[in-house]
Length: 523
View: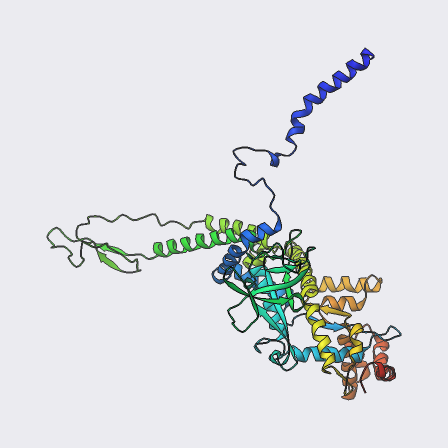
């Protein structure tokens, strides 16, 4: 071997050995020291995390919602922003053979779904409306990490023969696991599934002797097919089968803030309760009203004067100066951490707009709205669409969807499953500037008017119909054309002319619908 080559390799080897300590360390977080001795170093899978923590986290989350103002505020924010005051609105998108929207059919289905969603129809108890169910489901997911709805059919399900039954997810036993069932399936956290993890059935804890049940560790469980169960949760780990409360990372800080505020409040109250002590003179016989064999309990009440009990010569006053100036700063800092864990802005969570300028407020609102939009899309896919499709199948079979006096055929189910859901939207932060920007986007063909309308939470078809009705109503009342044009500035004569043609276009649409009526309604 050439000696020069040997010396070259030897020098490279020594350099490699010199660099080995830095290579060995790699990441500081992977090191072991007294500062990281309590830091976990063994990965835990999703099943073990859920099995260890679910019940405790749910119990503490429910306790915080019941007693902590900030936790309750977060729950209200979730309901108001994900569902809103009107709920998520159904928009059926069935089309005719020529690709045009089948508006009469779509309206008939939407009207029937609205009727079913009234109080007394959609809930097995008859107490909840479709709006109330939506708000309760999303609140339950935020508080408990998951929500469970059962699809109920038959006479007991109400006037429509179909209704939803909301069930406490804790009735599904998280501790119930089976490695192998006679049918080859497994059970994880009370959910029977195939070897690939597809849910087959859910086991619910019950005390009903009449129900068909299985027994496990002394408890009775009802087995309900997965096709009748809507299990809603946001998975955060691959392989996760049950949901964890959304407030999990913020619960400890919320609990500590609550205790901290309670202690400060009591301390401030005692400090503000100015009271005095009456010290007996040397000639006085002394106060003998209290039994000295028992402990003395003194309540601090403002404006009261108490005698010093016999046997005590002096009163020591504790330091009641706290809370002082650092209280607000400390609580604000803690709440910022809570808000970060909840994916909301601190200003909204704490209702604190002190010292906030317009730019930061606008940016915070826009970022937060993106979080809400993501949750809206998730709940629509996981809950709303599944409920609608289950309702649609039975409603068509029972003839509950009526068009022009005739029930719609069940064969129309396939194209009626194409839907868009309109969740709530928010007003513009700066209406004047935002409206000018939207107008410019429309003029440059970057966006359509329908998209802008949908961003405001409205259905474009409804908006245009209302405009046409308003114009026609003004004409019917004898309002001059120039005043109508003044109301709809920017549209010019085209707006008024289009309103005149509205009746004709609707008539043509009606004729086309009637020509296709044989495939839409039953004879």
